Amino acid sequence: MFNGCTALQTIPLLNTAAGTTFTSMFNGCTSLTSIPLLNTAAGTGFNTMFVTCPSLQTAALSGTGNGVAGVSMSYTSCKLSQTGLEYIFSNLGRGPGSSIDISTNWGTDTAVTVTLSKTTAGGLTAASVSTTGVTTGMQVTGTGTPSTTARAVTMTDVGDTVNLTAHGLSNGDEVSFATIVTTTGIVINTIYFVVGATANTFQVSLTSGGAAIALTTNGSGTVRYKATVTAITAPVIAAVPEQSVTFTDVGDLLTSVAHGFVNGDVISFATLTNVGTITTTTVYFVINAATDTFQISLSSGGAVRTFTTTGPTGTGTVARAVTFTDVGDTVNRVAHGYANGDAVYFTIVTSTSGISTNIVYFVVGATANTFQVALTSGGAAIALTTNGRGSVASAGIITLSRPATSTNSTGVTLSYRNLKTDTALLKGWTVSG
Image 1 (cartoon, rainbow, N blue to C red):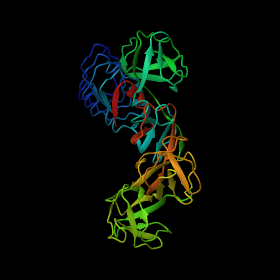
Image 2 (image 1 turned 60 degrees about the horizontal axis):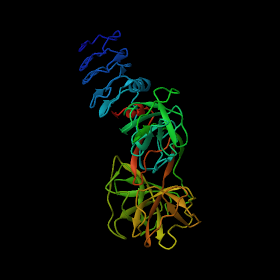
Image 3 (image 1 turned 180 degrees about the horizontal axis):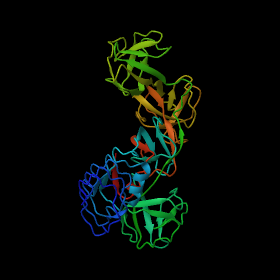
Image 4 (image 1 turned 135 degrees about the vertical axis):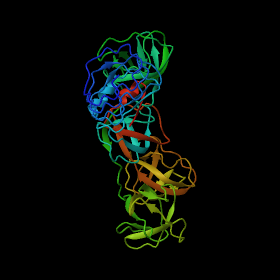
């Protein structure tokens, strides 16, 4: 309709309620700054609608998707702020299997990805190898998190309740259902508001504080909701800290002032940044140790292990070496510095079974020189089988505003960002950018 109108800056409100194809409607409108809230609920085609609109700052569409599967929207390379993008998300319709690309906008922040995160169903924490870049107020998405992985519920006709033990939701919270079996009165990928919340049940309404929706026929389903970061506990640097090192490509040299290593020491790395060829899952031996420098080998007294760096140098941290004892199920290190409740993970586990690498555990039964580990804070100590050795590193704790939705004990990557894409996610959209 307006394809190639390079001088067009805005348009009046149009009656687009019956429109089905909006493809290339504003393609090439390089001066376009805003459009009113157009009703696109009947639309099925939106390809290239806003291509080459570098001045666009306001461009929400009402009802886009509206239950039509596979709709594709793109707002790439516009001038949309965080507020402008979130306004777009709030006006989207239900979008099962639909996608929206917001790359290269003013409000498109870079998500902070944190690996080795562990969430527990109904829990308010995510344990992570690092908390760097995560701040309070950020949303969280990823496997096991509320807006990404739906949590199983049942629905009861009498009382119109959604049932989930210790759900942790409060009146006014936004939820949506990813699946619904048998029960009618509600539909998937639609945002509802929690009302009538008790410890183990809640009802839903179309408006915040509104009347509860009547549910017909007992059934089951899965629910999604939002969560943000409310508190952060950085990884514990214990009495024997994880040693920072610098990697120099020329000469394959590692530098750490007064590192204290001697030739033959067994080490592994908890973190590596801009370093190639070596890994966090390999045991290395110290060779050619000097006061502030050393090299590494794959065998005691063996050849220098070469590595590459992005730029002249890279950085990393050396994990703490430990031993494991079958009798007593203990992890052993003199003056380890950990306290009960601290989050840790193992970068190396040799011979011992019952624990794995790159899984977050919690310290229990701590003494000055030994500790045990559990899958949950304050939980039962894990039984260790066969004496062995390995390396341990500290993890951090990120506290969420609402409970995690599924159990994850194998480690995933969670994503944290200030831009609240979760409104779109609850409606069934995939957001890229």
